[in-house]
Image (cartoon, rainbow, N blue to C red; front, side, top):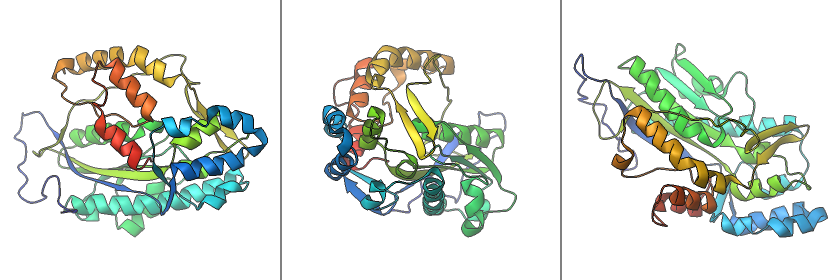
Length: 326
């Protein structure tokens, strides 16, 4: 059952000329690196790392409990993170692990779609936690036996929004060329890239939330299936650069993380969703289920409050956070 496709590659009905061209989700896959750390273990390791500024850690250590996370996966064993590493060494870790996860998750998604690698026409690669030129898909296309004329769209800098934005982009590209199959892979190796500075509160918060993993999807337009990707839209708020991101330091990427994210969500999320829904012609009241990035329990709570949802409505997001965060 694991390889059961969302849509079978056989007997796919082709959309008739003149009809709206749907983008259909053919398969999904996920992958994580081999090292697993419990939230309690992460707290202990970070506490040791921040022993010179124990007061700061003690004031913020509650974030490890409030995040609602039980386990995470990392690119290296715990003792690797207890040592100092420069940006070059961290980036080598990023590239090596990203290649491994990309190869695994892409091959799984293609197989679950009942396709051969040579039937993939384009790739959207989303990643923000390292630097790779050539980009990751170019480094693994021979191993995956992808075509040499495959179209490549590497996307950098989207952070937590990368997965859904990358999937929307893959769907748009598929619609623009019906009959083509697009592979979207989002891969992030936060633990290899992030620098834990002992005097930085954001580093403590980030170490309680972020981890490593990859997800992939195969999309095709011009066919019918049970899961169709509809219209997409985005919003960007002015003067919000300091809410979340990276700051490049000599020893790695220093996380920029504003603790005021939950109240920001409560204040602005509902209006943004309503405006985007209206723009896409999708009435807000017709949306039966929101699917949200599980950015910690406080953010999930804030989304429920902003959208006037009963507490616990976003149960899958909470379940994902408790089981493993990537």
